Image 1 (cartoon, rainbow, N blue to C red):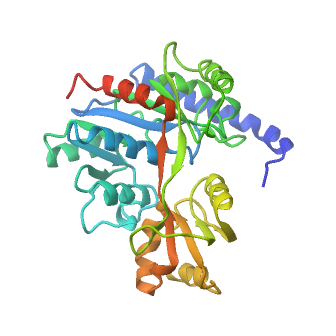
Image 2 (image 1 turned 60 degrees about the vertical axis):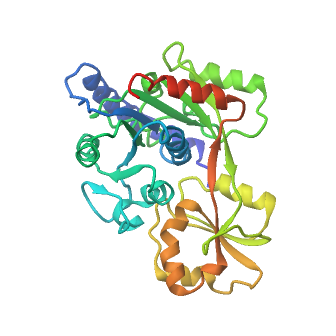
Length: 346
């Protein structure tokens, strides 16, 4: 439901207070009063100013594919939504419950190529990874733009095309985690979830607005979301016609729009972000499901739903749509830029 303007205006004083608190915290880090610790790995951070749903997971996966052939690489996340605490190194016994849905998705894709770990304290997590893997040279930090206790070598800020940070306010009147000028810490900005064939004039307008808050010379790249061939929960590609959409992600609208333009969406079921599915959820999802209809989820939902669906014996009725980030015309420029930020360590 769209927020009423008067509600946003009423909440603005609270946003000013929240923004002032984050300003003080950033000031203390900037002046060294609060300490940022240096770790031995090269640290690349992917994060945002906006709460949730800016496309961090596909960007982390892009970076993992890009760097893993060049140097030992690790992904470190907080592991939001997991049922455990502290440091956990992903292994064959891991699940979405033990390390979180997004880290488990990383591990499922890259277990033979990339180390995946979770820890609320990123410095501790980095040091523990190094204890297990002394030759690890590169650390990708997922959703850590505001986690300033660890020093970073490269700060990549994501800006959702549909919800630009330069038009938003701090919580609770808006969805920003800090004031817009937090973008000054960015070494590059990626505008995610852009429509295909974005006009040059619009790109220039967006860059002009972003550069009001970044340091001079910080590059801005544009990317779309690529939806790949739907996959069955049983494995392998599957053809879809009638689908029941299920999503437990921060911003399900783009996923819903994609399915609606390509398939006949008979029903939609939206859960909160990082929803922990239960057997009763599965029962509800397959209730009255017609034989020609698939339950179609995001990949993030799949890693949590699959064990329940397999146990229920209905995996053949479920499919998911993998997504990836597509830099289009900016592919070469971004690859060259991000490689140039790390050549001194590899």
